[in-house]
Amino acid sequence: MDTELFKEKLKEKTIDAERIVKLYLPKEEGNQKKVIEAMNYSILVGGKRIRPVLMKEAYLMFGGDDEKVIGPFMAALEMIHNYSLIHDDLPALDNDEYRRGKKTCHAVYGAGMATIAGDGLLNFAYETAFKAGLSNAKLTDYDGEVNNRILAALQILGKKAGIYGMVGGQCADIEAEKRKDLTREELIFIHENKTGALIEAALMIGALLAGADFKDVQAMEKVGSNVGIAFQIQDDILDVVGDEATLGKPVGSDAKNEKTTYVNLFGIEKSRQDVSNLSNEAVSLLNDLANKKSVDDPFLKDLILSMINRVK
Image 1 (spheres, helix red, strand yellow):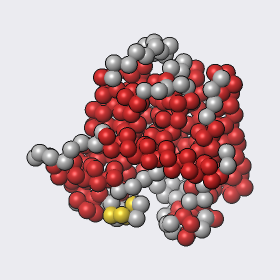
Image 2: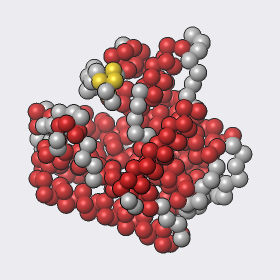
Image 3: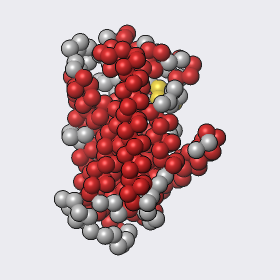
């Protein structure tokens, strides 16, 4: 797809995802108004909305056409992503005062309120996802462990966000701080779960709710895994060779913090080659699905490649 056309489509799809997310945000009222304000502040302060866009594209790729089914899950996934950012920024973890050029939640509302705002977003995400079950949509039976597609999607959302997904990756990342004996397998585990798990969830849930079978949902999981791992390896590369003005953040922070990265272990060239291999495999899997099901989404492939091969 032409670069300018891709940028225009991405802008349109991001605006649409923003609209959908806003539809499901809680009203700022009642005795709990302050925590809801903090929740909404963190969602509305900005963001690329990549995860809900990915979910919608996977849904469209497999023939989905009901916003009442996919919309609640899109909003829920973005809420989960933002709760994780609120908690990452807290003084007990990264202690960051700015994100996306704006004050972080704890810098505005205090660490205590920010903590429960993150908790609130996580819980409200599931309240929101449950609304897909109220759509009365007639979905086909799923050939996975759970026949009901809404329940199967909820199961994926819970697992990928939890201890066997993102939280598990965050745990391993904290334990790995300043360790100099990390193995490739440990780094891959961190990347696949801390970053990749929610990308996997986006692609899997989108495909599943549109009618994909178990095998195809597994293929989408593999695509998401590759994208998550490659995304983080590229992040390691950019921290060494990236342009600070382009990135919008300081480079060299990994070395300064004595953090073991993929580049530390394997060097720039091997890291670049692995990013290329992972991205090529992801696109190949999407092409196989397109040929098998007579479905295709050139934008989805271009979006995945833009994530992996980014310069900022």
